[in-house]
Image 1 (spheres, rainbow, N blue to C red):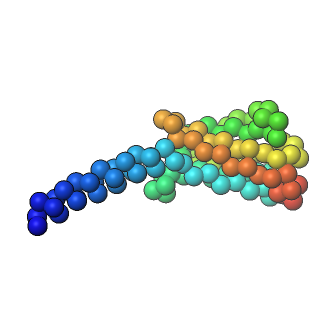
Image 2 (tube, rainbow, N blue to C red):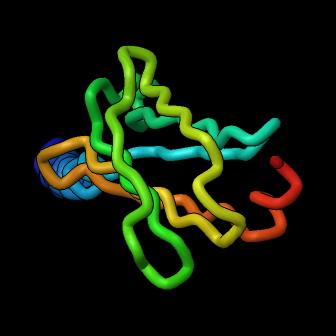
Image 3 (tube, helix red, strand yellow):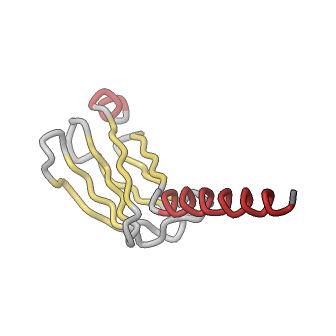
Length: 111
């Protein structure tokens, strides 16, 4: 009956809305090392680039090595600061954060 269908749709709407807001704080970050440079790319789940997001790079001892901002295409590149595992953190504001770990071997291979 219609009443049952409407109730089901209302429940479905609430469930989908809840999962949507949980995803809202997700931001994607990808990084790789090549020819002495680390390249990072940050974007939202809908594909929009993270503009002027803060990128922080930490070594394996959680020491902050450098900080920068993404450009209009969500890109931020930097010279390899040291041969170590690098944790790259993107902060796109309003709770949108993520991290990407480049293993020491990947950093070494990208020299």
